[in-house]
Amino acid sequence: MDTSQHRLKLRELFRLSLRTFRVKPTRAILTIAGMAAGIGTVLFLVSLGYGLQFILIGKLVTTEDSLITMEVSYPSEVNVVIKKPQLLELKNVPDVAEVSPVAEFPGEIKNEKASGILVETRIVEPGYFRLTGIVPDIGEALSETSPGLVISQQAILASNLKADKSLLGTPLALKVFFQDESGSGALEESGASESLPIVGIITDESLPPTVIILPGAVSKEPPFYRKALVKAKDIDSVEEVRDSMIGRGFLVSARIDLVNQARKIMNAITTVLGVFGITALIVSAIGMFNTMIVGFLERIYEVGILKSIGATDDDVRDLFLMEAMMMGLFGGIGGVALGFFGGKFLNVVISAIAVRLGGKAFELFLTPLWFITLVLGLSVLIGLASGFWPAHRAAGLSPKEAFTKR
Image 1 (cartoon, one colour):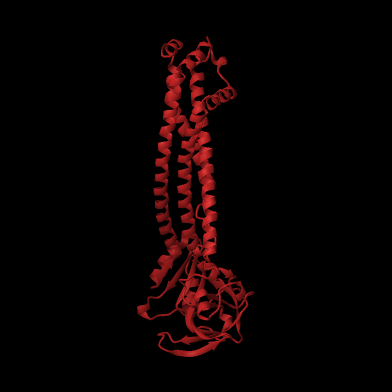
Image 2 (image 1 turned 90 degrees about the vertical axis):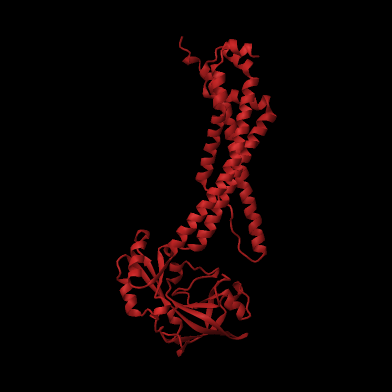
């Protein structure tokens, strides 16, 4: 006799599977809570790993161009500098998209409230900020339409000023002392024709007293450059350009190397955190499996009744699997809510503390959408796996065996 037409529909299976939540609510809630705790732990720890990775790599790469830009300079022991002919040669190197020279000389800044302060002066092209990824924390970067100077926090503190927005627009007198190539003495003094307004402030405490200006801010061009920024055409050209620079005797520092190294370290940290989370998830899965076994043993008589009134083996198996899947799904939803909102709450607390201490707000916990989807799918699979053996055993029982074991 063909019994396929008597199979329970999905809607009926769903309705019957909810019966266990009404009959044994405490057990169902505790099982779901255990799953939620495991899923939430996984999501929480992996979100922490992603957040740390984003913060670290975000510090290294703030612009897309900085990832494919390298800093080149001659070794200090050879006492060789970069001049305009070398810059033209670098621009003609295959796969080089852009070359931006950087001159560094001692300088002096002065304002009305303090005596002169010695600083390191960087004379750069407007593309310097885009190629290095250096972004002023207060104000904006230099450009042809926004002349002036960008100053470091250490230089501001040395001038007895306070590094905040109120300082933007404050004029500073600047003198730059061009030295010879050996750096043994001053060749000449080149000063700005007028005071330069502060347009940006870099609050990085590791940066020494520094002022960054454009070439037009001083009366004479730098006589030479200590280093240059070389941007490759694309990320696939970085290796070739680097080899070409090394072949010309340059020391090369590429930010992509730091990013790759940081990514490897952070991937390892995220993996370790994920292992701890998965351990908690396994414990929760074992608890759920135990619940399903106990539920099966308690419902043997019920299985006999279902089969006596016409339920097929497939119906019984599907019913147990549906119950297990629903528990896993509810546990996954609870775990996602627990891990996601727990991370968001800590982000708010940590950011508030950072701002209170004078820092900037940031997000320590980041949860990718694809990982939330993966976690929900994993919770359903764990539910199905936990219910497989009880479902298989229930489907194999005959009505006679079920009534006998009652």
